[in-house]
Amino acid sequence: MKHRFVIGIGSQRAGSTLLHRLLETSTDAFMHPIKELHYFDTLYGFRAQAALKRFALKQLARQISRIVQAKNADFVLKQKYQCHLRTNKILATLPIDKVDYLDLFRPCIAGAKLLGEVTPEYMLLDEPSIEKMKQVIGDDAAVILICRNPVKRFLSAVKLMNVYNKLALNDVTAEAWIQKMLAEQSGWLAAQDGYNNYADTIARYSKHFRHFAAISYDEMVSNPEKTAEQLADVLAIRINPQIFKKESGKVINDLGSDFTISPQTVQQLGERYQTNQVFLDKFFGLALTQ
Image (cartoon, rainbow, N blue to C red):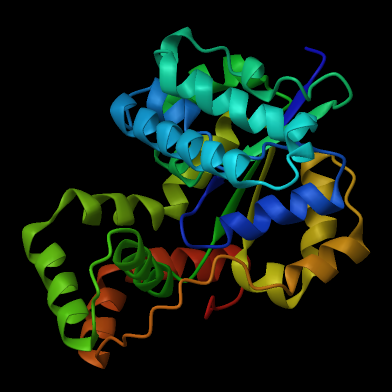
C-alpha cells in the first residue's frame, strides 16, 4: 500500500476530538475533515446504514447553505473542502459495502502518505471485525485508544446525549434519566459499558495491530510531552512535541451542560465500573481522575 493509516478508536467523551486536532496539527497525517467516518462500524453492522446516511445528508444540507450564503466561496476550491463534500455525497448515496475506504480521502491522497480519522465507535468492534478492518488498513496502521476515568466519561456521555437530543435536562431530570437507563439496562447503557471496557479493547486491538497505543486522557492533557513521545515511539510516526503541547491545552467540544449528579448516583456508577477503574489504575500506574 502507498498509504499508511492512523486511526483513533475511542473512547467516546475521552478526548477523541482533541486527539484528531493533535494529529492534524503536530504530525504529517492528513486527518479527514469529517472527524468520524463511521466506515467500519457501519460496514460490520455496529451502526445502522440509515444513521450514517442521515448524518451525511445533514452535513450536505449544512454545507449547501454555507455555500449559498457565502459572500466569498473560494473555500469550495480547496481540496480539503472538496474531500468533505465528496465523502458526504458518497456516504449519503452508496451502500457502505460499495464504498472503498481509501476513496473517502480523495482528492487529498496524492501528497499524503499518512491518512487518518477518529471514530470512537470503532472501539466496540469485535475480534472478527477487527481482523477484517486490518485487511483494509494494513497491519502497519497506527491505532490509538484514549482512556478516561469511566464514571466521568459516562457523565460526559450523558451531557452529550442531553445536548444532541435537546433533552433540556436539569439536576432532577438528569438524575431520573440516568436511573431509568440503569433500571432498563438500555442499549445506550450497553454502549457505555463497551466504551468503559478498556481491558478487552486493548486486548483485541493490540493482538492484531503491532502499532497500537493506549494513552491516558489525564496525561495527554497534563503531560503532553510524555504522551507525544509515547505515541511517536509506539506508532512509528513523527510528532512535533511543541505543537502537540500547545494544542493539548485547548478546550475542544465543550458541551456546556450545567446539571450536576448526586453523590449517591456517582457512587452507584463507581461501583458499576469499579473493575474498569482498577484495570486503568494498574495499566497506567496512576489514578485517572479527569
